[in-house]
Length: 332
Image (tube, rainbow, N blue to C red; front, side):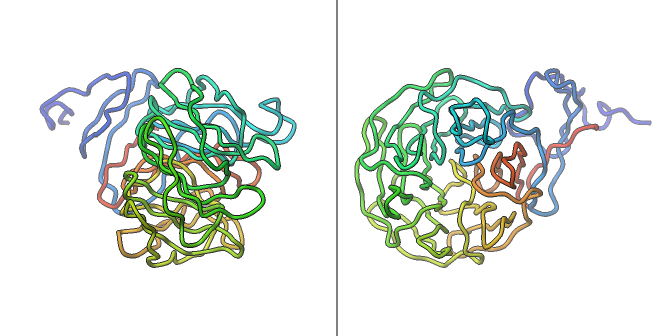
């Protein structure tokens, strides 16, 4: 029987962390998790279960990539000691496991997030206690959160994304009304920009830069399928979601003009997933665990969804791989 080295011309590598961009057919041994892993081509776009977050919560946000993500804030089950009913917990994902790291300075739910990795992120808005959504902004440097300049308009359950030095936040609610506000972060301050055409909360989004973004879904009420595209100066309505819904996954999940609309509520809690190709939405395979208000990170080709409300509050995490992409598998 031929050995792996005879077939591939190399030995199986022993590594502490999974390779960030494995090629199809690559095999390695992860010395941290003590698991033999490999990669294969995905025949269809789909979600696969990965290791769960440590703490049950929903109304959280995410930042980073599918293999280097950060999840922060949220609302744990009633009666838990984490900030009353509001969480400051932050967890870092290395592609295999979630690790608890230093908390936010302000416990809050319904936050928004931005960031390119689990070492540089931004948390903004949210609600530490009804009826007062906050304008707090905090910057993550890979070790600690630091309070920086506030939003101009405090809001919760808004869309956001980008990087820790160039982010957008749009929509949401001030607790008294649905908001259309759109603000841009330049690494130091927030600046008010042109509003959404349709004010709404529970909106989701995809941000590539402060001049390229997508906002979709939400409630005003009723549930909306409305999708709007941002070009740096104004919002334009484009084709709607196939399924009008609210409370989809929030975080730095998507790079406009592509996007994923993940889970939410279309009259009931759903795992529906839709892919935006720059012109239209197409239905994809559902999440394995239907949920609302999850956190997310990554890109439409390789995303991560975690936490949320099934109910009850969830710890489930899932990784998304596009058709033809590389899927990591284990020997278990």
